[in-house]
Image (cartoon, rainbow, N blue to C red; front, side, top):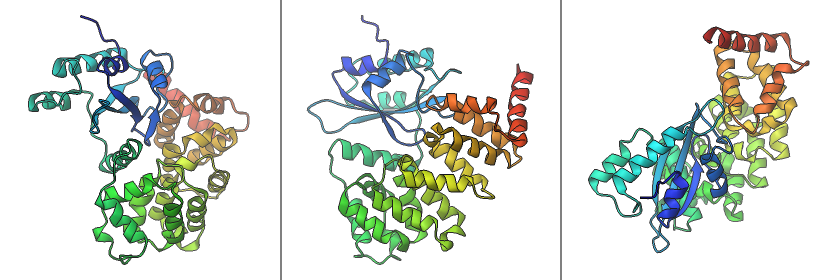
Amino acid sequence: MTTISSISELLSLSESQYRIYDVGRKIKKISKEQFNKIELNYQPYPFPIQSNACIAIVFWQKNSKQPFIWFVKLPLDERGLLNQGARNHYIAIIIEALGKNITDAPSEQQEELLKNNPYHFTPAQYKMAAFNSVINLELKRPFGEHYNLFVDYMQGKLSKDNWQKIGIQGINDFAAKIKEPELSSLLANNISALPEQVLTPLCVALESHPLPINVIESILQLLNSQAIAQHGEITLSLLRALSSSYDNVKVQSHINKLLESETLPIDTLVVLSGRFWEVFSDDKLLLKFFEKTAQQNDIQLFSEIFKDLVSLPSIRANVLSIIRSAERSEALSVAIGHIFNNTNKAN
């Protein structure tokens, strides 16, 4: 019997079509080539969260429109590489439960075995809704009635106060198609009139999608308005909506303005670190961010954010360079010193 040494190999041997997504931070597609390198430990997992890789595996047979979805949480080592023993254990559980015919509909007993394995996890409800929308769009599957209802709502066919009829899935379906000019115009023209009960989940739904420029400009205009500036929760939601548009010049300018402000709430720092890590490939922005974090005089917060950002392969070198920066303040030096003192004590 042939030994199956990777998830990629298992999927290929079953003659499945498949796609891999990270669902730990935002929803990001991982190419088959990149996932194969991750499985071979040729490269660290690109989006670790709390030393884990949170992966969605979507696979289907060519003649089927109904995909199977596995949510898998696999541990990473201190270098961010996939724990090979855990991955192999996961494969063994799958083969024991299903054999190699993984696209056969599982029995209730097999379903129970799959869900009770130690690597299975269930994403938060908002992330499940966002993921469903992404999969339906990419596999060209039709959106349901909730999408049409939300479009009607945005077009004014329902009053703005009649938001109770709106479903989270419809909001996420709308967000997934935001690149369509008609939908982006609808949002750009109406976002300022949306009640908080709709605006907040819509912003969360948008965080995994790069936004058209008209939507970016409308969100920034709202963020810069006096009314919104006094409402912390809405500000955070609007900021999250921009996180996959981190490479837009106007978004980066807004983040720079935030980091140069006199005070910055802890919640804003957490959103910036958790959703906008890509902007910190800019060493100047990263230094400003850590200076603001150090000013909070909260060593535990600083330590958690530092360890989280240094675990991300794309900016690891940038984060480590802060340790040697001659421009860092005394407060930042003290905060960094605490991290390494505690690390030395632990060892």
